[in-house]
Each structure stands twice: as C-alpha cells, then as structure tokens.
Image (cartoon, rainbow, N blue to C red; front, side, top):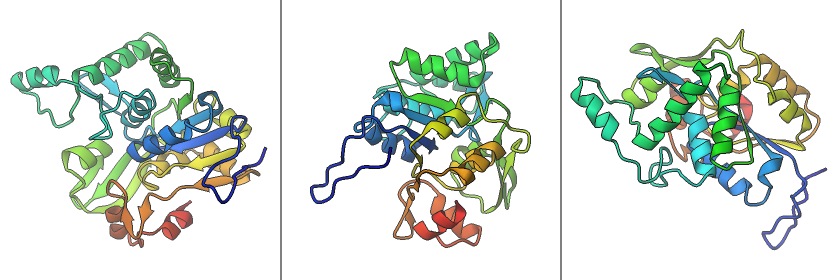
Length: 273
C-alpha cells in the first residue's frame, strides 16, 4: 500500500490500513506520534524506542524515552514539561533528599511507580521489551512500543569534562559541557529486541521521528541489524527534521551539531541519515 495523500484541502486519504514503523526518541517524537495515531489506528503503529538514555537510579531501571512516548500516547504526560506525569507529586524525592540523596534526576511519585513495576518485572525474568509491552497494556495502549534492543546500549558523551553518561550530560549538567564526540557503548554486540525487525519489514512506511538525530535516533541506528534493514528497505522512509531554520525545535540538537562541526539544518539531518 502506498501513501495516499489528497491535495488541496489539507486532508489525508484513508490511512486506516497503513502500517507504520517509527524510530523514536523522547519529547519531539512523542508529540509527533500523538498526532500520528489520530489518523493511523494504534494497532498499525510500531514504535522502535531509544534506550541509549536508560539508567539505573535508586535501584530502579529507568527508560526515559520509552516512558515519555508511553505517557504521551496514554494522555498522561505533563504537557508543560513534555515528560513525567501530569499532576505528579514529589514526596518520595523530597524524602530521599532528607536522607542525603542528590535529587538531580526529577522523578515524581506516579512516575516512580512505573519504574518500580518495570524493575519488578525485569527482576522476575521479563526482558525490557516484555516489560514495556506489559506497561503499555496496563495503560490501555494498542501501539506496539518496542525498545531497540533488550541488551546493553548506552549513549556516552565525550566532552571537555570527560566521558559523561547521557543523563549526566543532559539533566545533571544541563547540556553545558562541550561535546567532542558521541559513543554508543555496547552497540557492537546489541541485537534488535524481538519484534523490531519484523515490525520494520512489515511496515508500508518507516518514519524517523523529529528527535535528535545524534542522541536519540543515533543509538537506534547504531544497532547493526536495524541499520542494515533500513538500507535495504524498498518502501518509503521518511525523516522528519527536528531542526527548523537552523534551530532545534526543542533540546540541544543544534548546539551539539555546531560543536561537532556540523551545520544545524534539515539538510544536515538528511545527510546524517
């Protein structure tokens, strides 16, 4: 099935039978996908999520980009911030502060429940992809949200302050260090999670969401089997740029591009892909 877009009246054709696979980061991708499921049935949408940002904190497995997509599509996300849960409280974090923890990574109480349940599932033998499926099911989602890999894959920022895990750079240091290089630790051994390649192969179109091409889509494409499949894909692949008029719509994509010697533009995004 091809893309059927009517012209002249800003409407789209019947997309109910279209199968879409999307490569997604966090906030930008989530907003795009929220619009997508208005015109394509959730059952026909597969989302391959970035896990390069994942971390373990307070003994809990946290997957920020998967959670942002999940919360947004379940209409739970804090719309002002684009992440976390709307109306969440921070009682647990405040108490942890009293115990001497540095609460640099803001986790609300309802958000913590997600991480507690995910960690419980993983410690009881489920993989990350199986745990994600269960979380989505509990929230009433019918999209297929799949982490790029169940294995270890982490984005490391090589900066003028040394090597930083992604969340250290992004949240703790507020993207202030100068980026010298970006490394995807574990990518050489990472295999796609079950369902990833099948979802891509069966899609009528693959969309690269308007996420940071280096920090969000980059880790997904660092998984060799995913990258190879996209290179041989015979149907449309559509990349949506997060850079407009030389500026990132959200986040540090333009800053990072400049620091890596790249011109922030939609053309550069296309060339990166």
